[in-house]
Length: 276
Image (cartoon, rainbow, N blue to C red; front, side, top):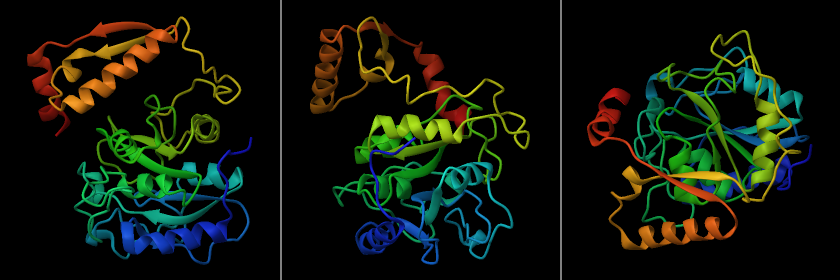
């Protein structure tokens, strides 16, 4: 299993340092990381033994875990080397990455725009190719939003697909481990590494881990794709509406079956209060 995007640990560390004045994306840079392996960036709510882990909060400013999260163990066994802890909205509570204890994270491509959050630090460093893999977490849209805002692949897997043991929690019934890459093949390879049952997390799935990379199929022929009209109809920016409409046409032209679905407005209005 080889990642398409590659960079050495030393080059990764150099890029993170070079990008820090511009993006403010790292909380801790692991300058004494082993020089071998594939660099990986960890969101600052992921426990890594001996590495300061603050969840971007002053409350945890001096917290140093004495154990590795399950996903950190899996990554190390697969040949990855953690090189940085990435900024996040404080304790994961936010969608902009503007309220971290270390200050706001800037969008990877436009400093007049937000990075999205709460996994903004991981997203912008992935976008600028500081490492081939950056780990985040997603409770509401904390991987999906920054992935969209910074133009990278963001994966929020099925609940329980990846163990959450060692992740500083927000809401256990909604928390997911997610991650960022710059291409789909690397995303599939990453899921094979991270997924799997973990008895330390009793909500983790018993389903076997698939051969996600080998099973990649770029064809849309015969695939069914749902368009959530309740959301798309509410978009007011005509540029975004047209871009999405063009995408739907391309998917149809490629053989996909488009199904339009909606949700009653009264139920939609309950989503935010229930989440909060």
